[in-house]
Structure formats: structure tokens, C-alpha cells
Image 1 (cartoon, rainbow, N blue to C red):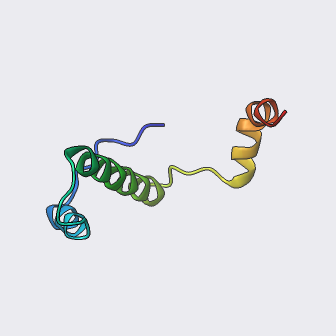
Image 2: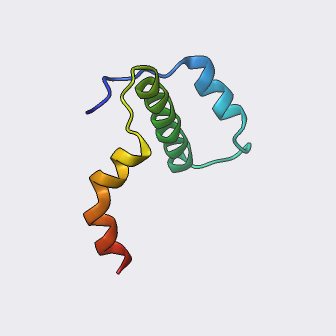
Length: 70
């Protein structure tokens, strides 16, 4: 269940850059853009109904979570 390509809005990117310190590395910028893209993608998933209930998540990951906790 992969979200179709999501494009970032230029104003959203500019707002995000304005919140960054005056000096930053390219890695920090790229990291911020990746996080922003994931947020936009998540919102698109929610709006399109591509979500799981808490119970569905618990069932889906029950075996994995049990193994990791032990």
C-alpha cells in the first residue's frame, strides 16, 4: 500500500527552510526535506483512507512485536 508520488509545495519548503538556523549542512537540509515529504505523504494517505486501525496494526505486527520485546 504505497502512496503515489507526492509533490512538495514550494511555500511549504520555504517555510521549513526559514525555520532552520542561518548556517546548516546539506545533510541537515536533505534530512528536513525527507521528513517534510514523509509528513505530506502521510497526510495524503490519511485523506485517501489508506490507514489502519490500532487493532489492525496490533494483529499485523503481533508476532514481530512479541519477538522484539523478549
